[in-house]
Figure 1 (tube, rainbow, N blue to C red):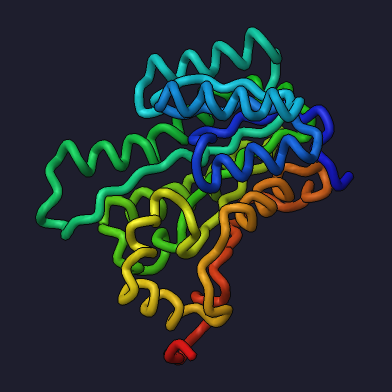
Figure 2 (cartoon, rainbow, N blue to C red; figure 1 turned 45 degrees about the vertical axis):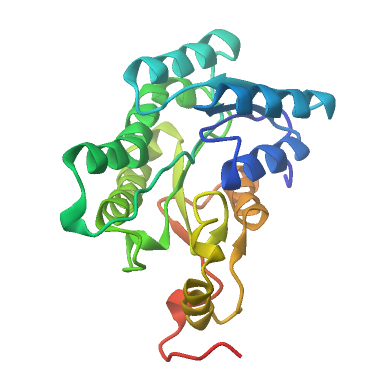
Length: 257
């Protein structure tokens, strides 16, 4: 049971960071993977890299915030697989600003990518997941969904709602055998956090709050995604798995040693 043999897995935002690591991890465990990303060159390059490694993976150029693009993803799954075993709603974005500085276009885009797109993909793929083998949805949320970690309020709002979406769908869709869980990472080495992690002051603040005294790695998050996709995690649903190096468990502040 500690494998993903022949699992049909869709991973959004699959060319960078946690998404890329999840694509590689699930393929190594025997899955067939469809991944999406917006940049055509990045999709083509990663798909060729995977093919060269003899993995069964397909890349689609898609902006999941666009309804037509979402329908294209759903149509591909229906036409090529006829069912879906695992949906990983990983794609996300952020704009870091003070609340009063956001334009309506900016915060609506964050909500569209981080919240509305996972909601609509989950709804649109429900029938195909219901046909899958031990189907599961995994939403990549964030500790920003339940703590203020200075990410900006729209991002935090979107992740908080995504965690609640996870819980509601887990209960509502249990009758359809679809498990739904979320993963909430703390600061992780990804393109989304690259600029911040080059800031020594910010890194000091992060490590001061983290008992393990380091940031996370995308590969560590990918292993959690893989586990939640496995049949061996079949009694886990409606949960938000926090991967934060102990940050949310620490009551007293410790300086970086």
